[in-house]
Length: 392
Image 1 (tube, rainbow, N blue to C red):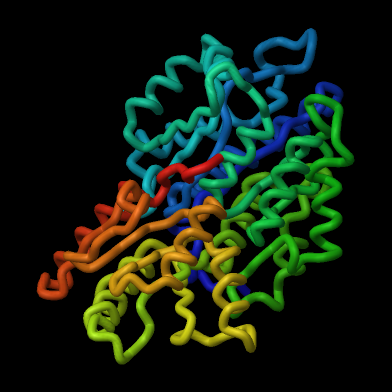
Image 2 (image 1 turned 90 degrees about the vertical axis):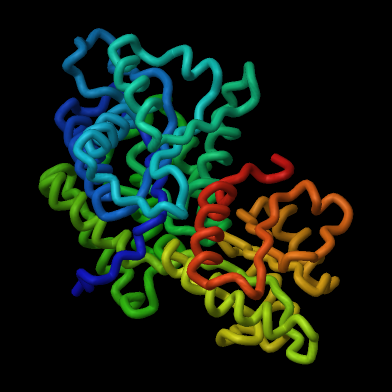
């Protein structure tokens, strides 16, 4: 049974991806749109966020404006706008914008006239972040890669090669992929089965697709079974409610700490106090679980393997360079090269070497009140947590 007090969705964003074939039954497409709208509203109300695309809103040929569209982005954005107007967006402050849209120059020029007013409302709301790939390009693969940078889980409906590519990105990064079993096909008629095929694979290998909190991990396959749409016979609102309940049970994303750990170093007490009294509470509030080698339980017998395995798959690296330890610089470089989200900190008076001076750094003082340090770190976190990677 789900624990109603668990809400690991708070501060997490869910990417919604997929499409439907023009030959799919209109009632099945309508079901998918109802499911998406209910899912988005519930995600935002419980403190989660969403990642989407924008552009055209295609419909099946020779059908009127009442025919359910073949894509779901505008349905999701419409539901998000409803929540914004009603003041029902509960995404936490350190997480940045709750809604992220990744698009291209051409896609924005293809926004339907009927959706322009909604788009302007969203842009003026202060709750949406728009990321654009390079001018003149509309490469869908670039959009999907950028979307994954802002997403903690993928929800897939129908679709073809694009959905399959997004799933590959998430699975490689050890992030959750939830494919819906609803038979919708693909708007482009490509791929090898899209979300419908992935849903079958997820049931056969649930731990690969779904990363639940250890307290409920034994129920992984049961949770997926609850999402069965029964070809659209299961009420869309009920399936959406179950999906969000599952998202609340996801394993917390990991914030990997890189910091001075030598207890005989003169600055160790100050660094230790900063992490325990400032970084730990801010990290928890932002919805992350910390990973600190030497403090938390190890999974590997060799410390170097432990460090780089955790750093490779972390959602965030918090790197403090106080003491100018070479290992900290190596790990910082790895995280930057991996395009992991990185927050850099250091005690006041620390010299920033080489090109690191160009990376934003939060400077803290050992004599400053902890409440003030926490507030300043929250402000820095909010401003820089979604900073683009150095190299794309």
